[in-house]
Image (cartoon, rainbow, N blue to C red):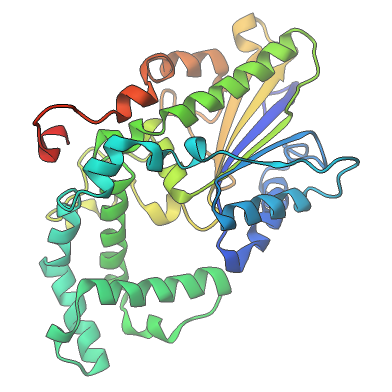
Length: 350
């Protein structure tokens, strides 16, 4: 819950675009937050001044417009949506990530190894049997498409697809792990550049919060009381990894499926459809010290998220900045993303 006697200063929402078939998800975000967190009734209060940025992708712009409409009619000029790909599609602008991960065929070797492993082989045999096909006529990619079709229709349309009947619960766990492996090595903890490429977004978030705090200290109106940034799951996953959330002691690999049954890194739960991460900055009028005056909560998909440094859901803003000081001061996007100018191979760099 919110700090006692605290005034909501600014919510900053970073969200993944809703699927085009489910833009209602963005109309619902405001009400979902109010239902799950009734102590934040003003989180997205109707038509507070809104700073809205988006990726250039059509579904992101649609999601931003849908979210804006969900706040209610604007009393005056409708805010423009700022397109900001360097901020929200940073992964496309990071040369090192593109060359060494996105376009590097060997970067996903753990994923490819799992596709050929015993767990996937058993899934292929069961699915082939259900379809009355020889197992050698199927491969992991085809089976994964069928599974994703099943999950998509269930999540978006609330319809049980006929494709779902092909899979047992164990099959679903194996295919979930296959997807988690891909996200881990492509967007998560697999390679440092995955998360380090998001430092410009991370720093921008804290610049916005710093600005609101300074305006509050000067008794000025908060220039952007609601900040909304619409990106992608590929925007949120590296950002959460940069902050250290959902990190397992043992990396996800092709050969440790059984040992990862209780893993923290589950991409379907971390970044589901219309995933959203909110930073909520409070001003505490009755704080005993100036350090305690500004406090922060984070919510992931409408649920309070315990901080890494304290395992609590409320942090002093100054403490949080201290904890992430190295990233805030020393993570420079241009340097992190610069390709090496030597004869080193991709494998050497990763």
